[in-house]
Amino acid sequence: MALQTGVGKSTLINRAFGVKKAVKPSIRRSDISLLLTNFPQVSAHYRPGEANIETPLISPENTLFVLHDSQGFEPGEDTNYETAKRFILSRRSGALGDRLHAVWFCLECPRTGTRLLESAAEDFLKSKKATLGTIPLIIVFTKYDEFVDDLEMKMLDHDFEEEELMAIASSKAESILNEHYTRSIHPLAGENLPHVAVSTEEGYENTLPKLVQLTYSMVSKWVAHEPSVVSNMAQRVNPTLKIQGTIDIGKKKYWTALRSSPNFAGHTVWDCLYVIHTDIVRVWNFPTPHLLTKKFRELMVKMVEDLHVPKTLNLTSMLGGSPVTAVSAVLSIPAAPIVIPIVAGLVLGSWAYSVYRQSKVVQQRFIAFIVDLTHVMGTLFIITAGRHERVGSRAIKLAYNAYNNSAVKAWVHNQIESYRELEGRDAALEMIEYLIKSTDSEDNANYHAEIRKLVLDPVNLSQDEPW
Image: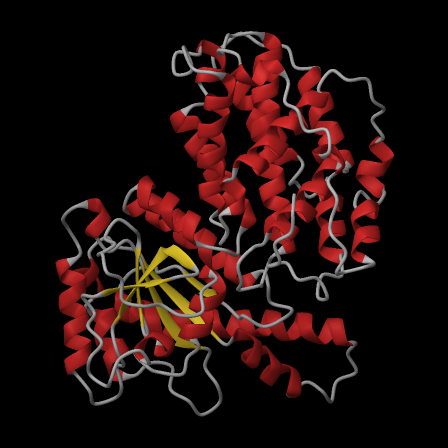
C-alpha cells in the first residue's frame, strides 16, 4: 500500500514476486495472501476510474500472486483512500483465505527538502489499530539506493575508498531512517512497527529477501501459519525461505511416514515419491511445467540410485574447489545442448515400482530424494534469479548437472549412507533438515558461490530442448 505514486511500488512487486503484469481473472482467487498496493502496469489495463479494489488481479507469470489495486492516493484526494480503508476493514475477519494477511506501507526514503509523510499517510498511521487491528503493517522505505547515493555524494570530499565510502553511507542511511521512524512514524502509530529499507538495484540484492523474511515471520506470528506458507511460495527472492517452506510442508504431510510408513502402506515407491516431488516443486513455484513431467521425475529418482555405490568423497573439492567445472565447460558454447549423461541408459531400478516397505535402504533413498530435489531447486533458483521469464528444460538440465556433479551431493549421499536410525520417531526428519540446511550454511556456501559465478547472460534459460 502506498499513499503516493512514484515511490517504486511496481518495481518492488515485480522483483519480489517475479511478475510483469497482472490481469483480471475469470475465476476469483481468494485463497491466497493479499497484498494491497498501487500498480500502474495493472491499472493500464483499465480506463481511468475503472480499477476496482475488490477485483483480484493475477499475474500469468505467478498465479500464486494476487493483487488488489487501490488506485492512487494523492494529496487532497480522499475518495480512494476511504475506499481502501473500507476494503481493509471488510477483510479483517472471515474465512482465512479471504482475509487481509499483511500490508506493505511503502514510503520513499526521505530526500532533502521532501516531506516523509503526507496527510493521508499520517491519518492512516493514526488509525492503524482501529483499521488493521492485529494485521501486520510493515513500513517499507523504497529507493534505498538513491538515498545512499545522495549521502555518498555529500562525502566525496573525504578520502575514502569506494567500498569504505559505501559502507559509511549505508550505515548513515540506516541511522537517518531509524531517526525518521522514531520521530515521525512511531508517535503516530503508537506502537512499534517493523520497518525495512529496500532497493531493486544491483548491489542491494539482500534487501528484498529481508522484507520477504520479515513478512513471513509477521504473518506466521499474528495471522496464521498457513498464509505465511503460501506467501513464501509466491515470493521469488529468498531461497532460504523456500527451503524452510519445503521443510514445513514435509513435516506436516509425510516425513513422519518415513519411519512408521502408515501413509505409504499399499502404494508403490514411485507413487509415494510422486506426491513428495509434487509438493516440493510447488513450494518453489517456478514458471515452468517441466519440473512436474515424468522425465524429470525419473531423473530425480535415478539420482538417488548411486547410494551404496563405492565412490571417493573429496572434501577439499567441496570446501575449496570448483564443483561446477563441468557446467562451466558446457556454457563455453552457450547454444550447445546440455547433456545429462545418465539419460541414455535411464532405466529405473525395480525398487521404484515395488510396493513401499519399511527398510533402511528404502528410507535412505527417500531421504536422498527429498534432499537432492530440494538442492536442485535451490540451484535452479540461483541460476534463474532476476529473470522474469519462463524456465525452460535447458535451465533445469543445467541445475541438475551442477548439483549432480558437485561434491555437495557426494557429501549428502555419504552422510545418508552413514545414517543409522536413532531411537525416536523424528530421527529421519532431523537428518533431512540437517542435510538440507547444512549445505546452505555459511561454512559450506562455496557451491552456491560457484554457481553465482557462472556467466549465464548469453544462455537462453527459457529455451526447451530434449532431455
